[in-house]
Image 1 (tube, rainbow, N blue to C red):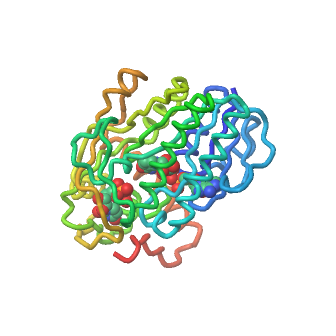
Image 2 (image 1 turned 135 degrees about the horizontal axis):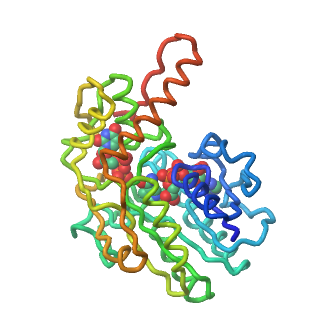
Length: 333
Ligand code: NAD
Ligand code: UDP
């Protein structure tokens, strides 16, 4: 098998590259590094079955070897990042998806789209099954991402049904773990960096909004399993955990995992339209893929805190006692 991972130098994409290499695939990672980092795949640089192609998937693709599977994860994913790259986010989900579908068609490859729970918007149905059509604003502060992904889903289904590409759509719910960019503004990297620096931990709003956090190893296992179920009538499958927590509770767990004395403070959210509740119905993932998430939240967060601690201490050690880095600040909180 040869797999192409678009967005493979990002957080989830780099773990997917690792998993595909571990099962024996050749992996071509294509990424323009706009929100990803070369660091994430540095450990693969000399791997004989891995290649990194630094390219924007919105632009014509370079000649590529024949591939059996195309995983499309290329897109900014954190609210501040997609807000700041609004047009780029719409383009990579529209034109980028079109180019990657055409590539899958040309190579007879399976196509897997990394979609999102954001297609449900601020859901009026709870938990969210795949049949729920969502409550999304076409012009709101998250619209570039939510509508970009909804279009990407529609294009994937159209291409599969009309042009015979085997495809599948994963609606990924909040995923966390090592290699999440500490500066990307999402909840887990923000809280961990703040806790490790003994800085105030910024809960947006009243902190009563909920998320269900899934460890990246589980999300990646779901993506790999889903690829084997790609068909011309693409399955749409939620990937996430049912372990729903309030954001202020997540702050407390992170603080405890990091053995920190940070204060937990309330600030205004920098990006509006914050969904109040989010939890997947994963009945379909269980029955179609035999998939359920395995990593409990506290264990996954401890593992993630350890990764950040090592990274921060490594960086600070290298600066020989120079003043500590300021913690990553959520944009204009
Ligand atoms: P990430 O920002 O770490 O990874 C995205 C990668 O895509 C980055 O490496 C970035 O450089 C690359 N990319 C963006 N635009 C590109 C372009 N035009 N050409 C080539 N490469 C480009 O984010 P992530 O959290 O790893 O998310 C990966 C995918 O999963 C995204 O599509 C995201 O929408 C989806 N997703 C993630 C989550 C989550 O909780 N992490 C939840 C739902 C959906
Ligand atoms: N959040 C927070 N403090 C932060 C970052 C995020 O309270 O420093 C909240 C945010 O308002 C949302 C949840 O945590 O309710 C998840 O935010 P994230 O940006 O990680 O992803 P989202 O699920 O909103 O796409």
